[in-house]
Image (cartoon, rainbow, N blue to C red; front, side, top):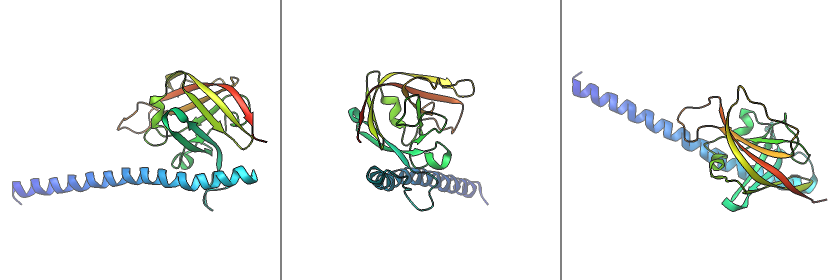
Length: 193
């Protein structure tokens, strides 16, 4: 095989690998969008019957709230649990925190490259709405911070919403210990019952 043929072969291999990676990235975003449609259907049913409705029969999660940021047009269904299988489809509520319709610190996590990409755009004073089966909870962003998840614990006694994602945004390296936190103080709750 000549040098030119070897170079052509290497180029073809690199091009195929690049296309494969682009396809995988596209699949992740497509899955995230399609899942929100099924999750919205399950959430609407939950609002009517006040039960845990799974978005698809084999799901190990269900909608627990709707996260809305009117200022930037965000409306997302929040799932029960913040493990990998939940976060693949939408933001997830941490069972280690208060339930979204209770007082205390409510923690919701999401991926920085899909559902929680918008966190980097939230500013102090932005209003966040968290709808649950029992009420509508209004929060105001009080600040953001970057923390090392291996050495940081959240104070669960505050009456606040904490939105969490990996950091830095737009990183090509998955994981890492840095987390970007958005803190929002509860201002008001309106009962729907």
